[in-house]
Length: 339
Image 1 (cartoon, rainbow, N blue to C red):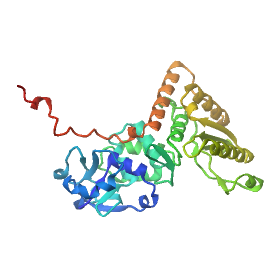
Image 2 (cartoon, one colour):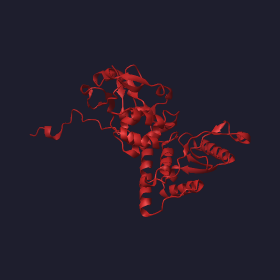
Image 3 (cartoon, helix red, strand yellow):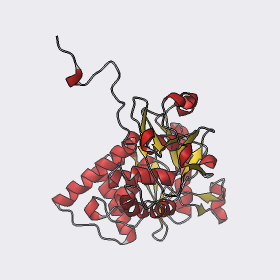
Image 4 (cartoon, one colour):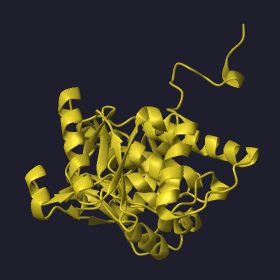
């Protein structure tokens, strides 16, 4: 028998996992092997360390669908007899990123699902509250292709609509938030600007090589045709001295390669006026028009920015984990005996 993590538990496992090689080697788990019993879950509990309870499990039959303080089980049927999964142990599997995205389309709204797509197709993970860099787990095309394939799963329509909007390669939640705010359409609260390339590799050639030890450099947000790059200044990975020196060298290299570099900090993203200024710089570089600055537009943009910023700093918003069921010591009000 085997357990398959899904929904919010799969999101948590995927975002904490540093071993991308395992994610890129999916297995197929036959329906009849799936288990929903809490009693036989004990041997795999050590492999669930770091995940919040209740653990969310995918099962095949109604008889296995249970809800306890430890587990919530959900019945899914892909109609081909197998689930795509990542093998953790012989008894424990996790839904693949594209399968997880489709499951979450049934419980998240469009904005949160889009932000989750940026994470699943990004180059960062989150463990113990800290962001770390890693290789990309999947592509937006894979999210779309799986949604097209899984014709009988609730949420498929939303997944089909959101997956094409996912930009790949974000290096942090704040980079994802900034890209979304700049690129989202006017009616959603964004600035409607052309999509940037996220952490796109640029070759470092000629005399510029003396400034940079590698043969490529990856600006955080890039509009190559406009020769514009945005560097998000974060101290997540470096001490202050290391960060300042490294960021200065990166800017020097990009300038020598002919790019204008705009530095954005977390403080900038906290300010609607600063984001407005940054959007103006990008719009002028792209020779694009921003929407009229009326009160309604400003209200929408302020709200959208606040929601993107909140999701960037509260990753639990993207898991939609249910609260654990009441303990045995608590009984619903109608069952409480009165003297």
